[in-house]
Length: 173
Image 1 (cartoon, rainbow, N blue to C red):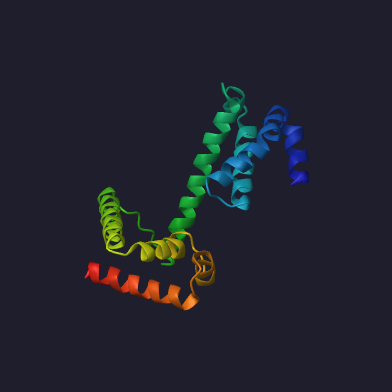
Image 2 (cartoon, one colour):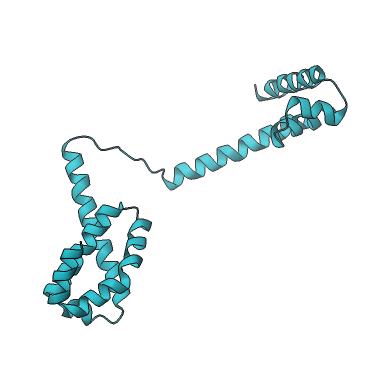
């Protein structure tokens, strides 16, 4: 890398100054795009070699950092697309499914209905069962802690949770 930088410095000093000034920002930017560091460094090198060949591209930019970021994004996407195409050809691509807006709405509605069903089932419990269920499942307390806090035996806590679960299951059926 230092050998390459030394050769580049001799050929195109203004571009190297921009390179040195924005290098870390570009690495960080590329990482935020989800690319690995080696790919980012390769793309940055390719970009600056391209800018050394045609200095007017970067030196004429109104905002060099923004220009570099958009150029890096394009370069990364191009190389990442080539990798995906290569993987597609060898049939080793992991298929990613993104839920549609309708699916998200259905899931949200289902979650809301489940929440209402749980609330309805909880309302059918006695006050002591509600208290114990809240301590056990909403506060994540152990059976021992619940027994100590309420001044009852651990066996009573087990029995209350079991009875409450049976009542709740009956309400769901």
